[in-house]
Length: 488
Image (tube, rainbow, N blue to C red; front, top):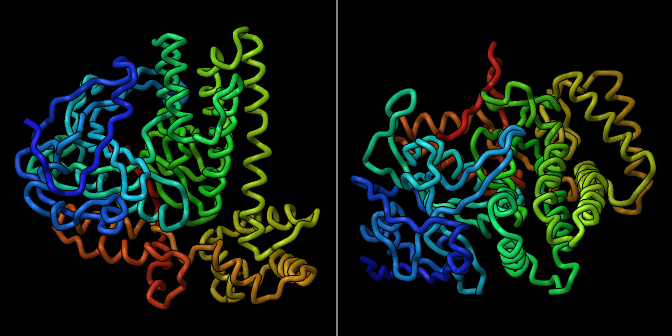
């Protein structure tokens, strides 16, 4: 029974007007005793939601999926995807999209409840989520947003009052995820595999209207869609690399048409610089390692492009060639974004032919001497290398001299260069050991203060305030490497 909730919900349901084979309408999966753990006040306000109403009993019932607000049409999206290179039928197995919130500024955002129960795509799972992984996604996605990286965001986390069984009994939770949309590469793969060409055209037109309204509705619009997605992914992955972010599970169902980072499962940030860095316990071959992320994005884009071939040209061979030509532009686009970002991290404004070798030499030194990625650039920003493992090495002394000479050959002042570096090098990142400490305090002891303090610091990663110092400290050395796990 639909009941009006005075929380500011202003739903449209454009995706629900697409062919019904794209999704499955759901009945809510009520939970026993929902309790609000954290609410993203600033995000709620930007969405046009009333914070006090969301904190009320009825508001929490909505965030738990126990009550459906007026105008909502809950459903789970169907999609497919290549998981570690293997194609599979997938879908929202533990999430329901309740509607598209239209903000006071007229923007449109999906509102999805993650961990809300079984759906037709659950594949034997219980459809629920544990508190730890939901809080982890909240922390990391908000950190990514503060870093200026396109990302889905977390509006709230509620506990369910129920236990879920994994290796042990864990407290259940539901996270409310906010996204420009949940259109994935895998959404197109699903329709290309099991739908008709007309359904594929409908989906592509929908994606264009929602995410690329500037593209004119002519015969080349589907090629323009592909090119637009390539451009956004090239920019996104460069931003990942520039801050040392490792996604961990870059399956095609975890890549968005909008160019947002999505699905924070076994993700983490790199401490010691090493391109081979892998955190995920299931990525035993290093497919999704830090250094391999650009290659994987290109591979994933090729799978997305394959799904569009019927729309690119009536002749399959011609369509395939158009797709391949578009994909071949990705490496250059990515590299251009990455190089511009790395130059900014070193305070370089203009271009010289030796810039890339200067950058690569620094990275090679960092790898050789096991330098911390974030703290090294932080030290360079303020020209205070004391305590950094690079200081005192002959390679760094030579490199530093070349770097200073390079800065001296540009018109911009040293003050301008330092400001560029401050704007490009975060003072801190969500250090893995600090995230784990916050999650342990919350899940095991019901103490959310550690997480709240961490979130406060992470909200201003470029501020360089004295209070941030403790959050830049490296973890104690361990005999076993840090591992992350999929949030099941």
